[in-house]
Length: 111
Image (tube, rainbow, N blue to C red; front, side, top):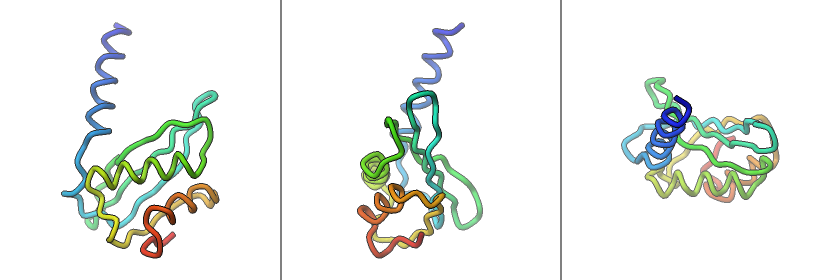
């Protein structure tokens, strides 16, 4: 059972991490880190104009740092998130999150 679960989970994670984002009408992006033991998963959740939520991606790191956040956001852009559009980014105030957002989205980011 455990091997089946791992295989199914890996397939779903791969599908999530490769999902194209250019068809989504996102206005809000929430970003936060989830601590799992010695690792942190930085997760991005998008909200469309109609209120529908989408898990956009996640990135693993040892800490919630700027490099991890920037890598996550650059991956989202590579999968179709429009870097020229203005989004409202909702974060918990961590400087690393804000710096990563500013590096990828610059002045267009509303935090």
